[in-house]
Amino acid sequence: MAFGPILPRSFYCRSAPDVARELLGKVLVHGRAAGIIVESEAYLGAGDQAAHSARGVTPRTGVIFGPPGHAYVYFIYGMYECLNLVCEPAGTAGCVLIRALEPVAGLDLMRSRRPAARKDEEIASGPAKLTLALGITRAHNGADVTRGKLVVREALRPVSFEIEATPRIGISQAAELPLRFLIRGNRFVSGKR
DNA sequence: GGTAGGATGGGCT
DNA sequence: GCCCATCCTACCC
Image (cartoon, rainbow, N blue to C red):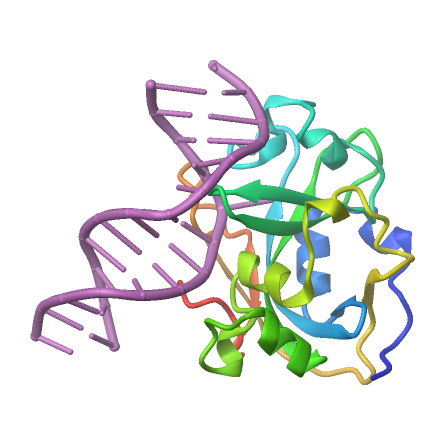
């Protein structure tokens, strides 16, 4: 299945909330599998105590301070991996967690990678579910998402939708900020409200 | 429909 | 040693 052009690096070179909103409706592609981004969360640079980058550059968080348009993949709870897209210019921290996809290509492949999913809505409706479905792992940490097998593309046709903003999921610090964005009414968003 | 508890290991104090 | 940007299963309405 074909999609629109790959998003250029300039797309990512702005604030995390702006990028998080603009990513909704875009298509995350890895090889033959792809899904429309329907839910995202912004993690800011300085001052955001919920962000992994809050305590500065470490072996894990260096990618977040690097150039925009790269993947930050982290390992969590001993068994899951989650995908972020780095934004802001190099030297400034900021990234967007991809939280849910609406599968649109390679459904057979994605179903085989998600045996626990009883319905298509469960294939990629969560940050760790979608990395499993697309085959994204820590090996992609630092990968350039403006070229290669893991990229984000424009949708084939523009679709209009309303954006809803809510607090971020699963955090304890800065838990009140409305930095989670989702396509209102989309049934592929993650279960939690 | 709902939720409680467990799995499982890296990162950082 | 404690904390996690999670998911799944079992069990209970």
